[in-house]
Image 1 (cartoon, rainbow, N blue to C red):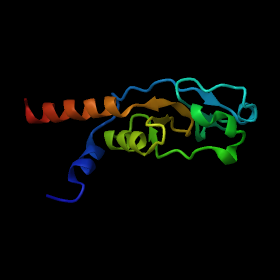
Image 2 (spheres, one colour; image 1 turned 60 degrees about the horizontal axis):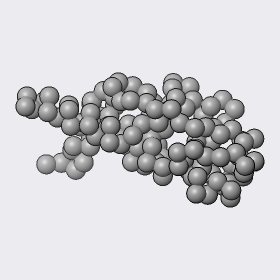
Image 3 (spheres, one colour; image 1 turned 180 degrees about the vertical axis):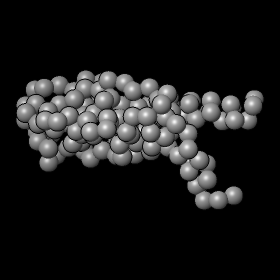
Length: 130
């Protein structure tokens, strides 16, 4: 009934309720020191203005010593945008965590796919009147 119909529909659902969680960030100087640990599986490298540069997995921390060796991220989720943007950010990220940013493109935290899917389901139930 239309290509990507359900996914496109998410573009009309506000993402204001998407929880944004803290994420460990590393600046370029910290990347140069492989002794700086990554906690929780992944850290996000950011520039001096707090904009995302790429991901650092804990499993490869010692081999990532500069911005050239970062794992590229997926799309970004501008906070408050649609559920589609939030889900796209989470699903396109190699860490499984979507990067949330403010209007200036600075990292505000991460979004988790399971929480976004729960919001999508709640909106579906509300629409159907169930």
